[in-house]
Amino acid sequence: MSAALNQEKVHDVLGIGFGPSNLALAIALEEHNRTAGNDPIDGVFFERQASFGWHRGMLIEGTTMQVSYLKDLVTMRNPASDFSFLSYLHAKDRLADFINHKTLFPTRVEYHDYLEWAAGRLDDVVRYDSEVVEVKPVEEHFEVVVRHGGQLAVHRAHNIVMAVGLEASLPEGAELGDRVWHNLDLMHRVPELTDQPKRCVVIGAGQSAAEVTDYLHRTFADAEVCAVFGRYGYSPADDSPFANRIFDPQAVDDFYASSPEVRAKLMDYHRNTNYSVVDLELIEELYSRSYQEKVRGAERLRILNASRLVDVDTRPGGAEVTVEFQPTGECSVLDADLLVYATGCRPRDPYTLLGELARHCEWDEQGSLQVERDYRVRTTGELPGAVYLQGGTEHTHGITSSLLSNGAVRAGEIRDSLVARRKAHTHDYALSGS
Image (cartoon, rainbow, N blue to C red; front, side):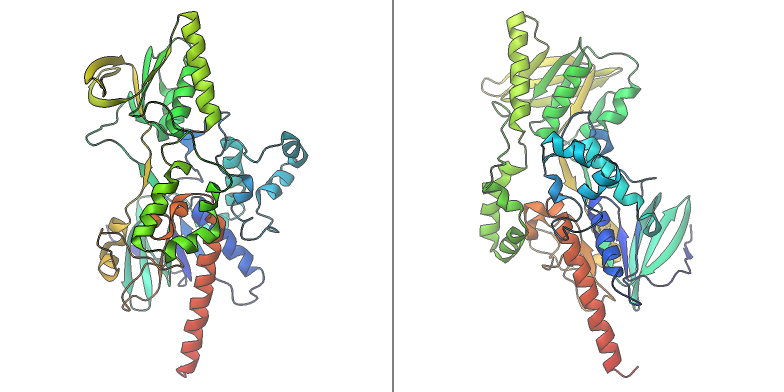
């Protein structure tokens, strides 16, 4: 299928993906343009979803954010922004109610509504149901091939910002099916069930795994829910004040300036702030529920700790799940009506989308892209502009790479880099006498 050249002008920046990261960038550009006079930064964003959505499959009623509302799309960069979470509450006539709630952590459903509210104010710069399939350098700009409605069109831009998000991480050899899911699909798939499961198995030890276990146990009142993980118990997240400094903007500078050895130590020290850990309140709730069931002699919540998944044999309507208790090597088979892999997410690999751009990029010894402090991919001088990454930079910028915590500041840094590069280009163009 050939692609038709879109007759739009060459954009200053084209964003691939429109989740929270590029939404924050779109806001930063919009706020810049309010005072830019006749010299705005022209940006356009393409999102393959039909409308804005952020992990909709995990919008479990009652679950809360693990990050303060003050780390929204803008506040850490511009506290006076009218795109803040507080501005959203004011617009929804809930500001006083939220203040009375006495919490820094809104529910996930409410925060998603905030993101939708912000995205809705920027509908003019985003094209939904539009999947970027190729990016290639052409003379003084990039050409970006976009599939929309079965048709291909080529759009042009001087710079690219890739925010392709996360994808499900599954154990090697795992296959999804009608009754074998990843937790990202949970709230999409539960309504499709035609009968109530009698036994559910959840694989994983992190926050999502604990939330899925809690949700299934509450939702299916007659079902046994088996939580399978290798640890002896859920590990609590370290959200203490000093440890939380790893999410500060300054920590990105510190991490970027560090040697590979120090970076590895910092990641190891602070992995328990985010990875395979659970809010203590939820841990205590699950423990209390399990204990009360033992008191009553009717145990539905089973914690299969120090265990690992050995084999899954799918069958119509479920799967036979073989689990090994690691201290003894004893195996047991669980006849499950539902198996949920709550085994985390990973950044999508940008290599495929980069296409022929990949040969112009610099890679480290581990096969990861080398990235400048302003989130520009380090490239040869042959490219017509810059390629920025939002996400997938944990190895260079630290633990906040794919998290909301530093999203507002990161968006501002990318915007400032775009502005500075354009000023430099304009200055060089003027000096050339053209």
